[in-house]
Length: 374
Image 1 (tube, rainbow, N blue to C red):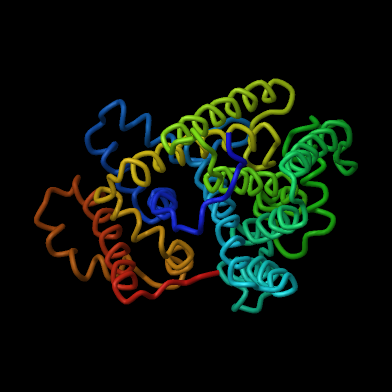
Image 2: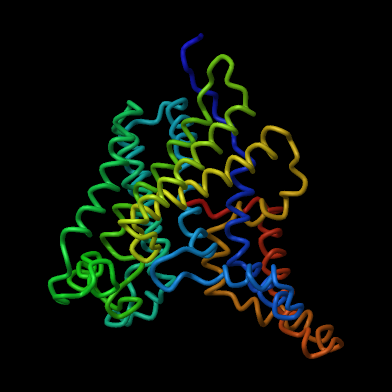
């Protein structure tokens, strides 16, 4: 058997498509499905529409996967970009600057999304989805860059998850004595946010994108980086089909681990628990293995173009929805047509129009080769 090597840099089309599939649900796709379920009252659609709402506290729905899947995908990309920079002879100091720049820029964009430009700092929510992605990716990238051995990287990932579990299991929130350890008010993560996080917390006593949750989220990004490294590996006898199969098996194992861990440390997106990291990491890996197999291995790509357009400008559409009034444009273009249908159809048609306008906006950027790269 020949020694393990790494494949040259090659953009994974499946990665753009999967990122677009992930963002599709918050770009209007979720609203279309929910309205279709309401209109038809078809049980499978009604069940799926319920999956498009976050679990109140413990538990899991499909909506809970969207955020960590994006972070997982960001992790997959890093070994490829790291290899590309190494090939071009980029200095390590320059790499560090890029890592910090990207991480902190995402924090800034998250604060802008939350209303930073209103300059009302007393009510500004500092924590954000983009901020969590930026900080977790940044820390994972630093760990990944400073460690060459796979075992050491895995040890880091396991240490973050086990350490976070032990911290929350053993240390209660001092300001809510007697509260249930993993409740919103009784967990140590929420206490840290109440104590140190400036501005407004999302749930007054808890913020789902708070400070301490960055620790397990870093492990989510690392799982993505492990996946990207594995995709780049080349070994005699390891075909791309086998590679996809191994990823699916590993993903299934992570799902089982998450479910077992859930017994003592509940799956909870708000706390980004260690069981949640394993469970959604497994789901993310299984989804990626499927997209990778279909698009990059078998070469069936045409169907994925719709998602790729979204995925190539994912940060753009996330920010744009808080800046650009797509609803107004959709009503201007399609409002008259919607009025020709029965009133019961209006919510579904409005949702479809919103999705169409958003996608055409992204398609224009795609054709002009304008991409927001953070």
